[in-house]
Image 1 (cartoon, helix red, strand yellow):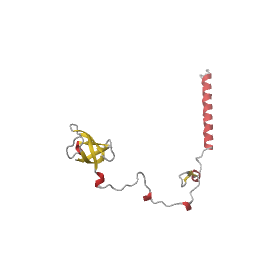
Image 2 (image 1 turned 90 degrees about the vertical axis):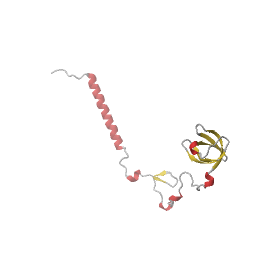
Image 3 (image 1 turned 45 degrees about the vertical axis):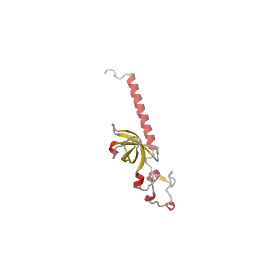
Image 4 (image 1 turned 120 degrees about the vertical axis):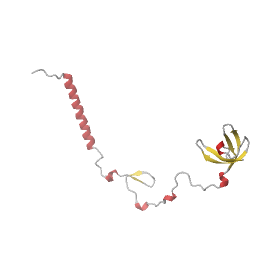
Length: 149
């Protein structure tokens, strides 16, 4: 019979691998024994009290209040619809380039500058003209439409 082909270092490496596997299996068994997976549904339930805090006791049905879903307002409060007079704003043309077909109107009330394009004009305008206009939400902000002197 010939000599074994295994060397000392190969046997040592195999022993180390076996030891690591054994330790890994022991840790796995410990995790299984300490696991919370086997709990009942009641043990895993949590509740939210009337202050919004998470608690482990169920809420008292006697303290329950009825909430009408229509009373809940999410976002901006409802506003009354604007009249035709309120939609029309007044301002002064501060800049207008007729060749390129755009300019800006300074609103008299809010003093904000509103973009105006030639497509939104009903008549030709020039700088320092007093105009009335309506606004719509454009790609980059407010845009004046239905511009008239």
